[in-house]
Image (cartoon, rainbow, N blue to C red; front, side):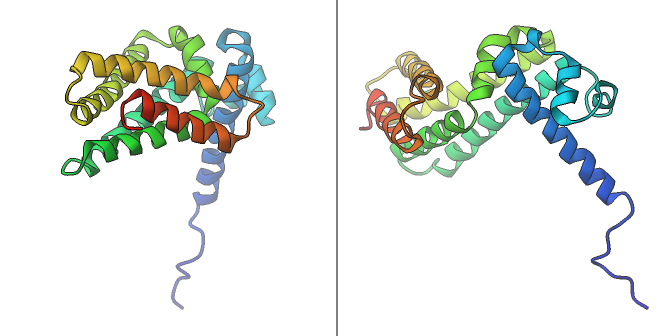
Length: 203
């Protein structure tokens, strides 16, 4: 009798359950850290939010600092690699097209992850030094990707000027989802994209 290829291998379900619990803990931490601040949340709170005991949290993370590391380093890696992919796809095309896609990418991030933006702004200093340096390095890389594309799209602007514009656009995009809570997500997204294009000279 041939083995059933679709049969679940031993340990697969346990591994999937562990991965799902880990993601659940990250989602709980994201909500609680954004609401109360990193220092206002205990490991017990993370466990309670995920429906497990505090000791059980240690099966997934060694500390609440490790949870913060995964959240902030992870999103910085996501943004940097996403920016790299967009720039690479447009290496031989018009810079304006790359810039439009970068704007769409970052607006989508800001609209979907406002908690991470708040945690980054408030609790970056709580990261261990090595992880904090990694986040800063990834952020600088992401800004540089944008600035280089902007300077190609707007040749009259220096790289320094382009970098200032990029920082300004990030500030606008990252803060607006908090300031415009009464507006529909569709309106906020449309207006953010239009404002970012105008600020970067591609309206």
